[in-house]
Image 1 (tube, helix red, strand yellow):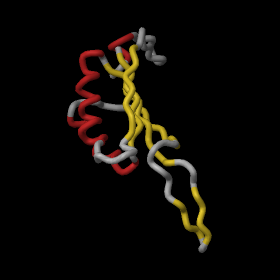
Image 2 (cartoon, rainbow, N blue to C red):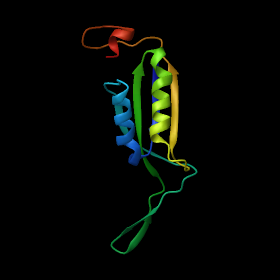
Image 3 (cartoon, rainbow, N blue to C red):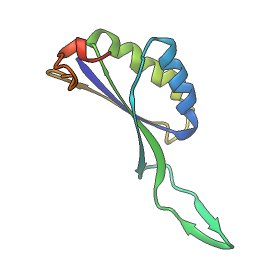
Length: 113
């Protein structure tokens, strides 16, 4: 069992979502996150005043999957999320000991989908 966490650009979300659907990933968790990094934030102008946001808005996708499918999911995110510029994001793959479905207590691969 694996957990894949990907931090991506907001502009690439629809491409990644569609690519995941095309390979049969039926659901994932999505969070709005903020980050700091090599890519610098842009100043926001509001009513003539300039404000530096100091952070870069991103989305974090979390996917639980069987180990055999993890490489395919990572490759799809890499291909559909890449712009080739600083700030494209990161992907982490984490080993899981077990997963439990709260509704009925199903475990491991039964609890993923």
